[in-house]
Image (cartoon, rainbow, N blue to C red; front, side, top):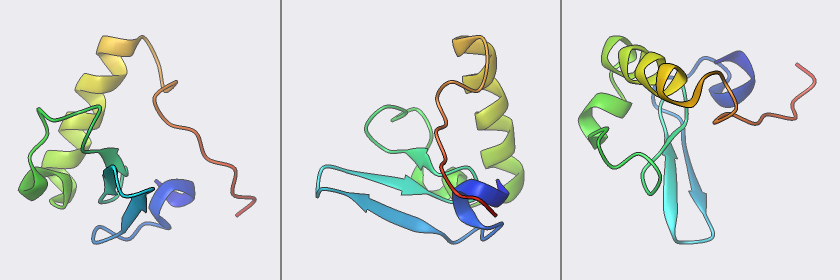
Length: 69
């Protein structure tokens, strides 16, 4: 979360005009349409969704972050 959004629940990043990375976990709108926009920006709902994604994918491979913070 620190690397993805700098702990900002309102963080949003546009990916070449095709999808959005949203909220604390930067949950992608294209690859995770099951996570509503409202949920992506709610820290509790987004963390629950991130945990489900983690379980489904067998780890945190869905997240890639190159920040050195």
